[in-house]
Amino acid sequence: MKLKEILNKIFLIEIIKGLSLTLKMLFSKSVTIQYPFERRKIYPGFRGKHALIRDPFTNNTKCIGCMRCSTVCPSRCIHIKREKVENKMAVTDYIIDASRCVFCAYCVEACPVCALVLTEDFEYSTYSRNTLIFNKEQLLKNWDEFVQKWPQDLYFNKFWQPPGIDPSRWPKAKREQKPIPLRRVVEIKKEDNSEPADN
Ligand code: SF4
Ligand code: SF4
Image (cartoon, rainbow, N blue to C red; front, top):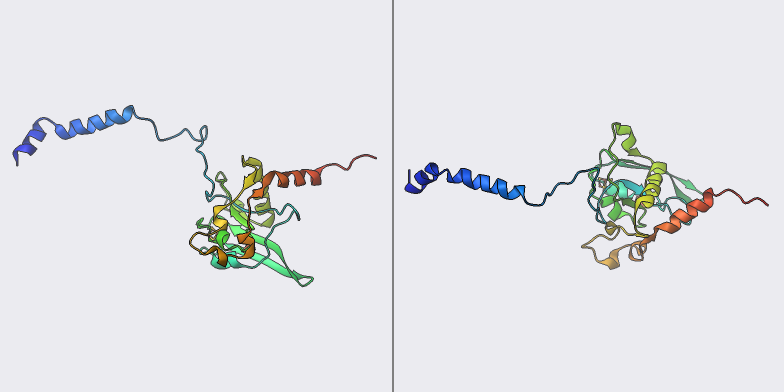
């Protein structure tokens, strides 16, 4: 055994080093928070609860049923039902099994009309797996609920415009995509729900 190691053992140097680190951390600022009483700021682009954007002009989804999202999904958890109505493809149902999703956002990137989003809402834990299977109505409801909570008037998801791809190769709808004015969506919904005025 070397002299240095013998001195370390006699004077308990390693233990003193460990205790001094403990003492230092005792007076440093805590990195943990008291969730759910305290919440961290959620940054735009956080990949949370799935939603289909409600088009403020049609009050329906913007989805055109192109199947790109379900094709690109590595978890195969998107199922789209569609049928032809008057020579146009109509989406009759859109199902995402969120319990199988790995939150890669490939579906959001692939969507040519920016109809789909992984909202910043992350508080949807549940005891039932079935409640994590979102159908079209639920996905639109997820968007409505998210809009109510989102503090800003505009919403833009960074995954709508995938990095690393020449923007000239994006579909036109993606190139021209602007932040969505959320309050207008809410206003339209309120108008729809308002009672007809008495004559
Ligand atoms: S985020 Fe990824 S895994 Fe989840 S539905 Fe979209 S493509 Fe599939
Ligand atoms: S990629 Fe977009 S438009 Fe196409 S089916 Fe999926 S959500 Fe609908």
